[in-house]
Length: 316
Ligand code: CP
Image (cartoon, rainbow, N blue to C red):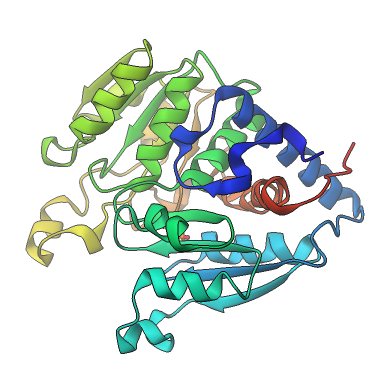
């Protein structure tokens, strides 16, 4: 049996499609994958499978960790990182591209600038589609690796005060993470400039589904007593003009002085890339876990791929 018996079989478009139990199953399989990799165990569960990565927007972590995950599982990888090398440049629709690639592969990992693109792609695909970021919409596999990091570093997933900081309007990682944090009963503090606060539709989605505490602030000082500080960058590519981006580019920055005033046990996370909001001078501090967080992308994505297209995890 596939571990967890997940609806993941259809792919992964939104974190909202998963129950708490299903997320826990992903995290449990991720821990097994991490352990298997560390022990050098044979995990060739997908040795007859092919993953296609269709990236219409830039990526370092998501694409390469998916590709690393698939190769560690013994599978093959096809795809493109530069859409200008694909026939989308000749005017081919996303639906047609996905329909064709789904006849060459067993699973598609899609990043696209349009919100809703993964859902649209899923409708024309013959194989499961994973949303690797759809515009300002969601980034569900990032949320899963974020939760995995919190569990590994804090020893639990609930009853934490999590300060989420930065461009919360445009940051898709935050939109997925907020639902996941709320599902596990955490207190969420959204810290952003007023113009870049978390969208009302995300807030109303949270209040419809969960009873947990959600607060808003503009001040980084309100994160000082948090258990987790989740920094994000200002999403330069989503601003209307360079001038508008310039107004917010250096709005928040965490340095050694700030961290020394924060909760001693706080963990500092970031989906990366960072562009100034975390000073490299804190990289060596015990609180800084963002490089570990990025590394967890591989075992978490191994678990996700295996739960969607594997026959059996076999990991004990
Ligand atoms: N965190 C993340 O999505 O990074 P990339 O844009 O490099 O994939």
